[in-house]
Length: 206
Image (tube, rainbow, N blue to C red; front, top):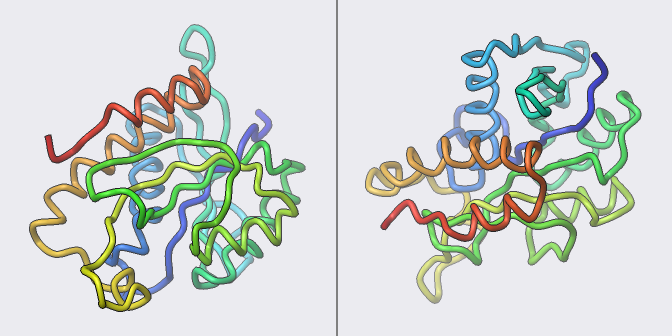
């Protein structure tokens, strides 16, 4: 079964960053791999010789009649500012294009508990998206944006995104992550418009 799409979660490697706001994409991809295992999609580590990424192929039941399609999930280990390098390498390996890529990332311009889906657009100061746009040669990849909210006025944004989620925030994160996995399945099963509607109606704080 050929890989049909690439799903990339953005974040920074290592235990120091594991629970930080900037690693929301990593959390979602880890949960997606777990969901595939529950659904019988048999995740399998791949491209293990590379030190700049973690990748796993998995199957999800998103085709008509509940048939499975195969995907590759990627976590760049290059640090956020160089995320595109790792994603481009995997994209080229499987013969995919930017249109076949879905990126899951943290989003300052949405409050924690909300998410949005879209294709293309700008980078809004997100260095991971900037790197992807440069290395993929196009901004026209799909994005699942997981809100983290902005810091209080006067606080350093760079420091804020690298802080761990607070305990009260983690209660919301634990609702967002499985909902993000559901949205990935909706995106590949029913298309972008359906994913956009579902994302727009979601609020983990309601």
